[in-house]
Image 1 (tube, rainbow, N blue to C red):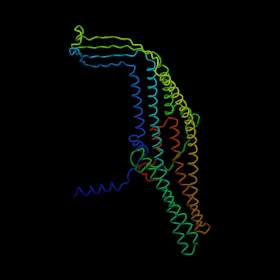
Image 2: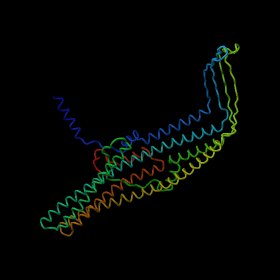
Image 3: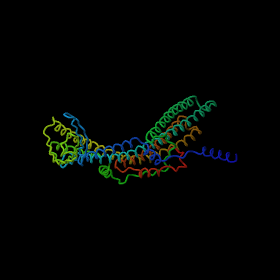
Amino acid sequence: MRIFVPTLLALAALAAMPARAEDLLEVYAQARAADPRLAQAVASRGIQQELAVQARAGLLPSWSASWGSSRGEPGNAESRGLRSSLSQVLFDLSQWKRLDAAQAESQAEDLRLKSAEQQLCARVAIAYFGVLTAQASLATAEANENAFATQVSQAQTRFETGLSAQIDVEQARTYHALARGTTVQARQNLLDAREALAEITGKAPGELRPLQAQLDALPPQPADPAAWVEQALQANPSLKAGQFQLQGSEARVEAARSAHLPTLSVGLDSQRLTGNAIAPQDMGRTQHQIALRLSIPLFAGGATESSKRQAYYQRDNQREQLEVARRALVRETQAQYQAVLAGIELVRSTSAAVAASDRALAATRAGQQLGTRTMTDLLLVLQTQAQAQMAQAQARHRYVLATLLLRQAAGALGESELAAVNALLQPANTGAAKS
């Protein structure tokens, strides 16, 4: 009993302790282990790697063996034999070009996997800060609803004592009812945001660490959008994958062109026959035959020419897809660069708005007590304060995400960039804040 009671007390103390808040890197680690999109990219790369191996196999030696037995008339003649065939391609330009295409497409899949890893970083960050934004919205909505509920109570008291009119009570009730609807919507948005994060990590998120109160909003370095665009065109893995895919399409065009060319191979055929149908001098002997084979395609029902046209169309299609991706990347990079600059201004302006709304609320409360401000004035100031607080939380989160998305466009988003954002979060022991 002396052991059992302290154990229960210790377990109760542990249960009473708040759960440790998760940070961005912890959520990212969960996503890497469970995200199906990343796993799909890994599998796609594996498929293409095996296709390259199969393309190379057509240029390597091939060896086959067979055994057969036959019986026939007259005299129940019987023969049995073991045969083998060894063949090596000496010249097949079409096969070489198909190998070039498969190797280029394998490199494209390597880059697509790298792009999927960067997309996972961005998706985790977007979902993580989506939850934080939804939590801030809910906290603001609940605080706003409670403030309006207090005003309803105060207005009712003032009306009952004859210090105000019934209209003040009805106005307070109107604002309170609208605030309650906002809270309901904010609670639903938070549930959806948490599900969006769980979709990536495969598990329901716990408490998340929010941003620190002080956030240094700094402009991108280098401070030149053209430099970021140039880096994106050189390093973005998705764009580079498209370039290798186009290279593979060019090789497949050459393979289709070469399909009508002769092919040359050398072969070694061996056989060992036994049975009463075999001549005595051949019984049990292994016979070898070396052959040099030249194959010249003459006519294939139009399939060769059709394959050439198909290869041309596929190459042209890939070239246009690459141009579409290039233009979209230029636009995305410039947009994210401007989003970072706009985020800096929004962080500053919303912070000033929150400070001003706090002062306005204090002044309005004092004015109401002196009779120089009405209930309507107070309700409007409370509403304005809630809007300013929500705008500030959104601006802070959007700025951080814009910096990450700019790096993603430039092909430079990884765990180290997430770690830099993780350093902006509140320490674990202060994770109860909702900003």
